[in-house]
Length: 71
Image (tube, rainbow, N blue to C red; front, side):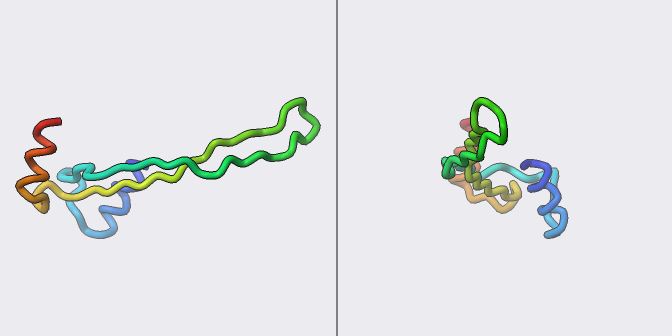
């Protein structure tokens, strides 16, 4: 996902070297239960929804810079 975010930033004309992850969230998605197709157990997949927001360091506010410095 980080590579995809990097490529999207390049397409939008952002400086890739100064990107900072501002926000990230992962939520559970509905489980998929596919047919067994001749096997003993069915195929269970546990997908998730991900959301990631990247910003350039120069565009961060002073409060956001302090939070990043603490981490």
